[in-house]
Image (tube, rainbow, N blue to C red; front, side, top):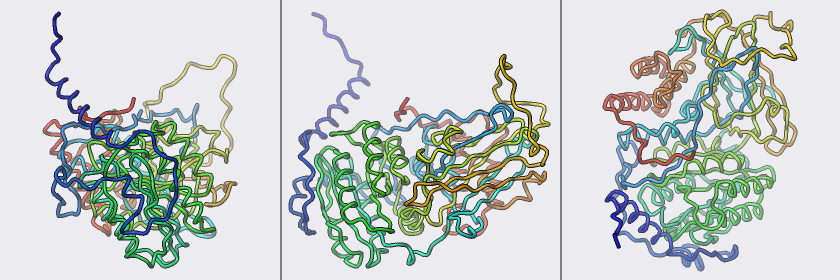
Length: 563
């Protein structure tokens, strides 16, 4: 009998998969019922059954960079997954004048792209680049809200840098800023992944350090609980006052990696603890810290999303913190945060942890408005076609805007949200929108009197109070005065530069005359005060990505993309 010969590359992959499977089977697949028992740290009775002693022999040395980030270890085998992005097309303003989407304050994509470009020296996968998250990573100097509204609306319009024949519309929302000391009491449950896949320096060790920064800023009125999960889940710390910082830190330090990943069981227990310690009028939130690799129990994306949707009805919000490389389940974590009335951040180093958990603590951890939706109506008398840049996975049907049952995005204290539209003027010779044949049985309705008002578009927003069920409406029209790009604010120009960079990274067919040099020039003239140096860092990333692009680096072949 002839023996089939297995090609060497395939054999190596099979052996790698077998090794991973063997490691993951260190815990039984059937998990016991969730039991919440008080376990006083640092000796956590019952919790030690979840984890084995740390295996230091396989852990790489701490490779923190001068900027506070971690150099990523290339394992040679990647299981990272990203949701596919079908880039928004141009829409005909006459046939389809309404653009509707849920806001997105996540910034995980920017930090993840930074990891690829700065730490690994390669281009990110195209579907890892969510342009709206690149733009929304930065602070913008928008006006503070007035009256009872939780946020303000800022609009500008100027020529699009990559296509001067088109106009670029800038829509900015600014959430009400709140001093950390004046935030309502917090009821936080740290839900920590301690599975074997977290046994890397840029995962669990970084997670511990990040949570330590948050603990430093807790107040006596705040409460913290800790749940850990691997093959099973257990309570590491019952609800504990923020003034007991040493006790909380000791509990964090007991966390050690081992076993498989029953994330669903941990989620159930974390929400149960959050409900038991619920603070009426406070900030009730589960903070899930993981690489997203759930492989025991309920593990499919659909089942996990359904679980989170059930739990969010309790009025408890969700923050997801992603860690690590090679195993990052970005697609899953993004969905969980979106469906859990929360936000998603990727921590590529301690500097990012400080930004998210300290500098932006209000926006990250305290919601001031939920189910925030934007609907822009374009005036066909002024606009031939338009395209929303980014937000592909946050699009809504036009009728969803007035449907208060439809879930949308959440806005945190002090958060800014920015959206950009590329607009083709009505008198432009081209129309890039894909048209349809004329209707046989009806004709489009004619223009109203408002079409002659000179308005380019109208921005409408709906939002609910954090504990409310009925939305409120804000309306904001915009006129195009024909201003030049140089006459716009630094915020407009910087956001435009970031969007142009994102189109280059994605290889967008709408990038027109975009170039890395043009991005750098536009951003360099729009640095503003640059609090924290993040805009200056962006310039360095543009230069680094230009060098990588010139060498032909793409970086997609070893990353899985969900299709």
